[in-house]
Each structure stands twice: as structure tokens, then as C-alpha cells.
Image (tube, rainbow, N blue to C red; front, side, top):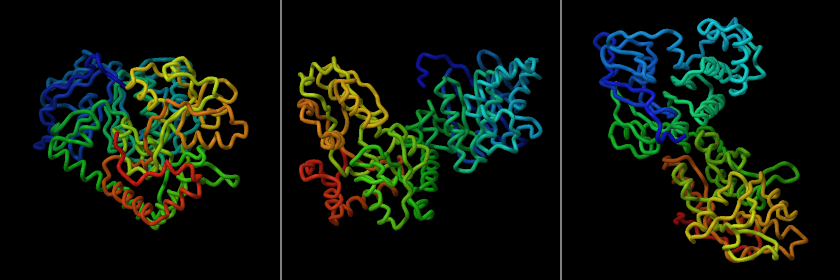
Length: 502
């Protein structure tokens, strides 16, 4: 969420905190703007959790002050606020701290009844929509022992939200969860960010930080070493201490090492886009991309697990480590290149528009046309960019879930045209017996390439994928794979394995 033009809601000035002779926070100065998500990163013992507790007034400080929304929340002079005022800052800890003898609804409404003095029915009216927001509307009458760890943490989040805080503080909320439960908590936090909640988050989930954080602050030995945009601090840090920490984190999280250790490779694939990838009559994932993924797994000597994704979920699946790689007709675009890394390209591509002959006019006239495209693809973005570079008004794009739906919308004259990857458009046109009046618009072709997508800044994994792709190409396996899925007339799509460039 953009915070441009917003005001500072948290002001932290010259904070110093010690436990006996050990100074754990050293002259901390930090501002947080309304609606901003600030992520605190750093090694264990760097002072991140202590800083959160200082902000919320749970820890006394020796000097400095914390001002929230104009109120002095903490100071070296022992400032104190009422419980009601402190409730404006919600906090979620590593441990869930739920009352085991209370149902979910009672855990969430307890503070409303005790602090806000609400009646039970009134508190319930506030709690139910919040439980719905965090996906727990069906767990209202469950006890904590009947919930998974991820569900318990979402109850803890709902409990804080019920107090209608202006700010939410999260202290490593996923650290005690099993890996498969982490994403459900992170998804809840992402939703809060999208809703404009001001948040300070202590986490080791770098992919979450890169996706959600307005800024990242790196702490070490009680000091703020570096503050900046997430991509800058995590991927291109300026300070040596930050660089050392980030290098260690990424080495510990090397996908190649994890793939080898597991003996399996999780590949994200979109199986509704023939001939690249689709489900056959037996429900198996097949197509050019599916077979390419199999060749990669074979060369790694690991088993292959397909994770079926919607187009719009491909990038996030890499950012959240749901998959190790995406082999899913993934176009290498400049906008995506700032979020994930791409392998060398393995197939040429061109975004085109398919239309009935009588709809075709000049390129300028396309601004008055309705064009179908598939939600979550880069089609609209790439064509719009081409039009902007030519000084033309862009067409009106209408989103559909699948290429088949988009093609049928054009066939049924619900839209004027259907835009997608040329190789997919050609497939649907060839499969349609009644295609004599359907043509490519002669003046639209926006070139790009298909490539394997991986998480950013894992050079070991990216280099391995690139090496395998070059081996597949040089061994003749690529040519055999191409001939299996494409016609001879499609040979224009073959491209030497190369790094994509604009």
C-alpha cells in the first residue's frame, strides 16, 4: 500500500534500553507513517522483539520517547497511559496465548467485555465479522485445542483486531508454526496490509517482507544499521553488516540444497493452457512445459511434484516458497523481473490479438474494441506498453479465468477480440473447425520470451536451472520435445537458450 502523503503515526526518538549492564537498544530513531508496513529484520538478539515491546509500553526504557498518534506511549520519564488507550496498539506474539478453557468467540470478545465494558451480544457483533475476515467463521464455538497452530494464531490476530487498533505489532507470528501452516497466517497479514492497517512486523520470512513491506529496517546489536525499501535492503543492501546477514539467510535457504535433501522438486504449473500445459483425460498434467519440468527433474535426479496454480498465483507461489520453480508459460517481463529471477529463455513468444475478419481495422481503432485476456497473465500489461510506446490509446481489456473462456467469449461476440500468447492463440484457432473468419490482427505483436521463474537472489539454484536448460537444448532433447507438442509451422518459436533482454 502506498503511504505517500500520509502522516507519521509512530515517532521513536533516541530510545535506549538496558537490562542491567547490557544495552539492548542503542539510540533508536524511527518514524512509521500511517498505513505503512515496516518489517524489522536482524539476527537473534539484535533487539527486534524488545523494540516492539518498547513501542507498546510493555518494557521500560532508560531514555527517549515513543509517540503514537500524538500520545506519549513510553518514555524514560515513566509515562503511563490507560489500558483503553493502550488497546489502540494491538500486538500478536510468537505464542498464541489463548485461554484453553474458552471458545474462540469468547477468546476474541473477552477484552471487549473487560476493557471496553461491552455486553456479550455487542462484543459478539464486533467479533464475528473479524473472524470471518481471518477465515474462522466456522470455528466460532471451537476450543483452542481443536484448532491447528495456524488457526490459533489467526484467533490471536482476530482478538487484537476486535479492539479496533490503529496499529498492529507482530512479533515473529509464524516462528512456532509448521511450514505448511505459515502461509495461512501470512495471507491474513497481507489482507490487513491491503486494508491499510499500519503494521510493524518482526519476521524472518524474507519473501513476505519483499511482498508486503513499505520499508525494512535491519537491526544488529541493538542498533538500526539500515532502513529502506524492501528490495533495496534485502537484495541490494548498502551496509556490510546487512550484506553479511542477507548472504547467510540466502545460503541457508538455498533451494537447490533443499531439493536435493528432499529428493523432490515442487514445480508450479498452470494446466489450462494447451499446448503448454493442461490436464489430459486421466487428470495428469501434460504439455510442453510439463515435459520440460520432467526433463529438469530427471537431470537433478529427483522426483517431480506438480503444484497446480492459477495464473495470478504464480509469482506469489515463488515469493512464499510454495514452489521451487515455475514452469508455466511464464513470460519474462520487466515488471516481474523486479520481484523474481528468471532462467535463460527457452521459447520465443509474441502477444497477439485474435479477431473476426470484419472486426479488424487499424491499430488506432483497437482503442474502441473490447479484448478478452486471461486474469493473472502479463498479456494486457505487455500490449498496453506496446501501445503506449507507439503513442496510441490502449484497447479495453476484459479478464477471464482461462484461455478457453476468453476464446469462447470472442467466438460468441461478447468481446471483439482475444489476446494471449501467439502459440496458445494458434492452438485454439487450429482446434476450431469453424475458424475461416478468425485471423490475427496484422499490426499487433509484442515480443517476449518464456522462462523458468525462481525466487530472487538464489544464484546457486538459478545457475543450476540455466545449466540444465542449456544441456537439454544441446543434447537434442529440446528439439524432440518441441516436435512432440508443436507443428513444423511453429518452428519460428524456437529460440536458442539465451538470457532475455528488452
